[in-house]
Length: 518
Image (cartoon, rainbow, N blue to C red; front, side):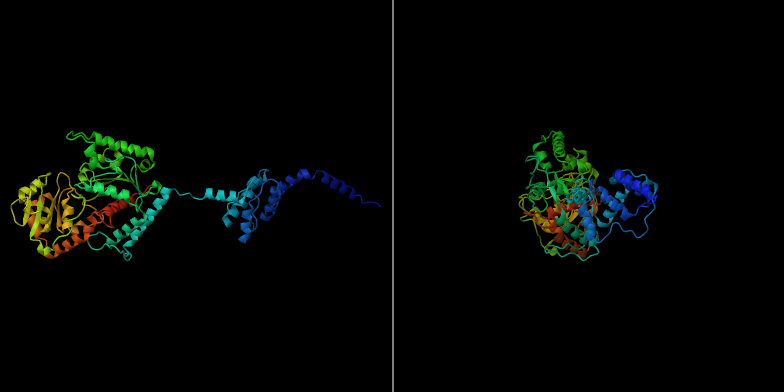
């Protein structure tokens, strides 16, 4: 049988291809990629065949795509022509742009991170996804909580006031009672305080509780016993408390009559250096989320020992004198309370206005520049304005005189703060503030003008005219407001909601809300 002449060349070509075909396998694939428009389905089939022996695509990702009934390979438009970039692809299949496009498409549609590697698995895909997710720091989480609190406080004035079983602030004694109430509730829900444990008593973690500086010791004791606001984890804290007592520094470090403040200054510097070295939080904010508390006259001076403590930190001070650097936007004014026995027994309460025959009362020594003017102008001058340096012993008590008076004069001494302000509130006597550069306690929340009288030093000669010019109706309003606002100045052991301890915390909370750390 004769074969056609053209069959012999065909047999020769077939034998040639059979012998040398394996070495052109990969080159054929490359040739296809170069020569034809890249259709996704064809490209994907070649890729899977090529990678079977070298690399594997995450099976979990493919299964996820199938489960979602989404084809990562289907396109609604015809495949694009080959561009120059795809024509210059390298010889390594796992480096091709086709593979990258497929991986990106699968990720975009299925939300699955696809990991192409020699040992790829579901666990490795999860790890890659975790690495790519946004990791929020603990500080960022704290700041997010504060943003939510700010938003809730801003919205509070448009909503009905939240009911509270203990107390619902209302009335003109507050600048905004709804905002204050919501802020207080947010404080109870969110605020955490870290108390540094460094330092030894009596200079640290201690303070007087039975003197004119009693609020230092009372607050230190209350915050260290507090299980609601105190946290042992500094990473969860919104603010950090420096538990030093200036009153104790003056008593145990300062050399009496030496007029040398250096030992106190060195003690404060050393303490800040210790916590700044041991913890990262002081240096992180330059002290802006830290606070100290002092009712001693030298509290502001002690804070100047460390520049960042003075300029950045929240200083809770009785001596809230703006002429000496007190900054109401970051510092807190709190009341000076003279607890001679450590308790309020016998202080609270007084008769009704109809049983208060004295118009105004003051008794005290020549202390500071204002009181001599008051004494010189009014002592023994008018029965309605009872002004004395010292009361006759055994005749009448100081507290009884306040209870018999409609108005109680509260002039500043050498420092702007005076315990008479709180004593007047305790006894139901409308306080008359006579001072310069003084920021009254909690005045960011409390409207002092609604229940007190402010008189400048220059107006001391006109005291009677000013006080008698207040109508009976207006005085009765002020009296009732004094009685209502008294709860914010009371000292309780243990503390009660909305008392002076919690009002101090709330003032610190407000300053922290005004601070944004990054």
